[in-house]
Every structure is written in structure tokens, then in C-alpha cells.
Length: 476
Ligand code: FRU
Image 1: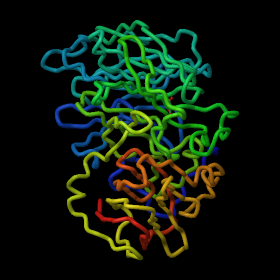
Image 2: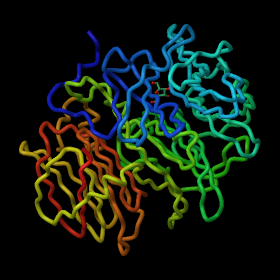
Image 3: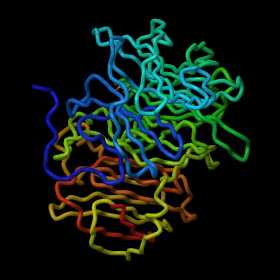
Image 4: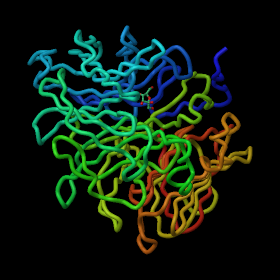
């Protein structure tokens, strides 16, 4: 018998505009790339059961980032290991020689995680000229393990200083940078240690990319962190209540390594909620658009699913920019691909309104404190509250929570995110509920909160109080 329970079939949790696998387990988004009008999403997938297992790369494509077409599994485990997280690069000039001028290759750079009980991690390469079927590179591994315990999740990006490709990968308590002229042979160029500033721990799924600002381009380094047990909860609930959390740094990339120049008093979090991990950006796309795994290792293997038998989901795609705040540059997000749906929005008055769908968006103008409560006839309540100092998302009474102790714990169930916009100023907040996933982008996108919710029955009412102007739009 598996130590993980089968998903409970209580209610239809299958989101409408959030990506889920056709069946069974999913975690990190991998290899996201934009080619010829199509967004490709690869993902950590165990196709045989609804829990984590030997990893494959699943594959799907979309033209609008909301509706996805499932494609055959792109990468299967081989004798060097199963296929952990990594990235894709559209090798348009065929630098690798693995395609041709007419058919530039799509390269997947990933971690091979040995299945011999030793858990050795090397980096491997695969290529495709139809962007669907991949061939593993004969010279794998392309970056052999240098004797490092955790050595994974390569993310390839263009290096404008050296005018070649670089990659950043997680190596224990730090990340390492490598550069290459042909995407096959890589030389190490530098390191960056997490925790000198920000959170320390074991690094996973780094990403490194430039964003324009009025002060010129700045670089962002995103790192998903496994926090050491003794560090969890020592400072306060907002910054260190979980064992897995994604942080970012703002600074410069000198062609060899990253330097954090935008020092902050407190770690910068990619999301204040519990359910956005391993988020990375699309390659070959002008703008920086991110997707994260909308779950949490602390309970993902136990989360309820539905008759569809999937377990796990992705966040919506979020366009990412840097905004100058009183505390310095911070990431701000907006949902990508929702324009046509937003165009059909209509106002909801304060007080109690009927809800006709479990998949909808709310455009909110925040003029002062207020609250939005979603309620069902079982007495379950999902609350989003705005105070002068905090955005609070409370799912402690929102639905099922007996499947996991951490999920049921108030530190996970109630998020208190600090406001980034002063109380004198109006701000926008966009909220998406899509069956089992709630995404809130408050304070003009500076305060993201993502939370998994498992109501036992549909929410039937939405109750609005306070100084909030709310417009509703359906997404199904
Ligand atoms: C992050 C992670 C990665 C790893 C993958 C395995 O969620 O632990 O570091 O490559 O998941 O599925």
C-alpha cells in the first residue's frame, strides 16, 4: 500500500484556467518557452500515481496561457536517472549543432537524479526539432556532479555581458553560474550564497533574469528554498513559517555571477501565500512571465483531488516587473491572458451577492479597509481582508483541512502579508478563485498571496464589506 492516500473524491476540484496534468502527480513547472505563437509548459510528472515518484517531464502547449493541450510525455527516466527540474532554450541559431538552420532545435537542460539509492545529480541535455519528441544527447551528463550533494535545476538564460548562454543551478546552500558557447560544454563562472542576506537553506529551482527600471536594467535572482527546521518560525509568521518558500534578490549580473545590490531588511518573498513554489520564467519571450507550482511540499502529497485523479496544479501565468517602492525595488505581478475575460466584468454591490460559478475573477479598487468573504451552506468561509497594514487571506475554515497537519495549522492557513501601498492611496487588487486555487494580487500586484483551498461544497455567496469597489467576471 502506498504511504500516500488516494485523492478523496468529494467534489470537482479541477480548475478551469489553471494547468493540471491529465492524471496523477505534478510538481514544478519546467522548460517553459515560447515558440511560433505557442507557449510550451513542461512539468515534473509521475504519470503512474497521484503522488511523487520517479520523475518524468510532462508536456503541454497553449496559445493563451489559460487553455492547454496535453502532449505526450517529453522525457522519461533513463539509466542515468529520473528527470528532475530544468529549463528549455530555443537554440534559434543552432549553436549546439543539434538541429539545422531550417529547423532550429529546442534544447532541454535538466537534472538527472540517480535511482541507485545514492541520489547523485548531474545535468543532462535533450533536443527536439519538432518541439514534441526529444532525443537525449549522447554526451550526457553535460555537467557532471562535482561532489555536491544537492546539485540541480539548471535554468538557461542569455548572458548579454559575455554574449553567450549562461545557466544558474542550485548547489546546496548556494547557486552556481555556468557559461557556454554551444550549450553542450559548460564552464563554471561564479557562485552566489543564499542567506548572507535573505533566507539560508538548501536552494532549488533558481532563475536569473533582467528587468527594465528607470535606473536601467536590474537583475533578479529567484531561489526556492528548503529552510532548515531550526529556522522555521523563529522570526515571525510572514517570513519563515514554512519549510519551503521562494525568495528573490534584486541586483546586478556581471557576466559571471549575481550581486545583490538592493539590500532589504527582511527577505523578499516571491509570494506571501503557502502555494507558489519553484516559479520560473518563460524563455524566448520579451516580457518576463512566471508560472509556479501552486502547492506546498508540506502537504501536496496528501491534498484532496477529485474524480479526475490529478494531484497538483500550476499558478496562472504572471507578468513580472520591478517597481520602485519606499523600501526599494520590488517585484510586482499581473495575470497574463485575462484581458478578454476582464472585458466582460460587472460591478457587485456591497453586502451579500449570489455566486454562480466556482471559477471567477474579481477586479477590486481598494479605497480603504474591507473584506470579501466566500461562503457555502456547510458554513465554510474563505476570507480576504484588507486592513491599513495587511492583506489577510484566511482559509482556516474554508473547507477540508483534516488531510494534513501543516495544512490545518493556522500558520499555514492564515496569511498576513504586509501592505506595500500607503493607506492614503487607492490601489488595485485582482482575485481569481478557480475551484481549488485562490490567487490574490493586491497593492497593484506588489502583494501576491496564493492559497490552495478545498471547500466541501461550492461557495454560494460572496459578501463584500468596507471601502472596496468590486467587479466580477466569470472565467469558465
Ligand atoms: C523542487 C524540486 C526540485 C527537483 C524537483 C523534483 O520542488 O525538489 O529541486 O528538481 O522538485 O521533483
